[in-house]
Length: 125
Image 1 (cartoon, rainbow, N blue to C red):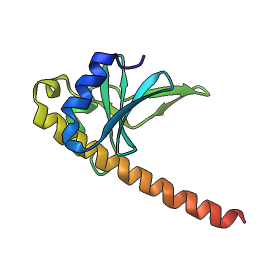
Image 2 (image 1 turned 60 degrees about the horizontal axis):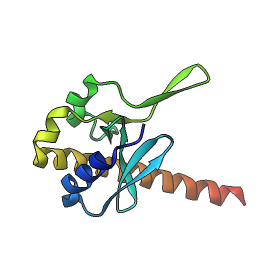
Image 3 (image 1 turned 90 degrees about the vertical axis):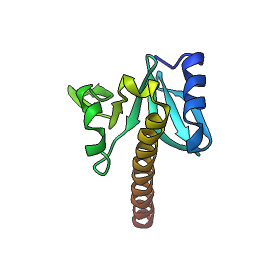
Image 4 (image 1 turned 120 degrees about the horizontal axis):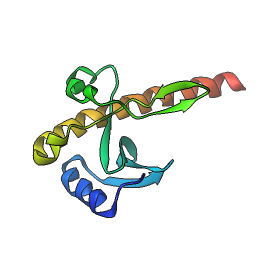
């Protein structure tokens, strides 16, 4: 389920220190973007943040909640978005700190995908 208007506005306000934060509905959820890079997702008014190998240790507390995933062909596919701990919504500075880590992870993933796409396009011709 997508983010409610009030939750979306709350996130935009809280995450303003990151830069231009926008939210966009997609796949029945809401993507959270900063300067065009998706670093979070919202479903049922719960924020999930991007996790990769470089920031996974910092997100240990978030690992207690199951990550966003979906079923495909009888398998569960992990989307690498972990639920932000509820306490962060009472600690704005820490919420922004966690969001910065997620944004950095999202940028690393985007960079890797960009390099992979360039390699594929060079070999396609």
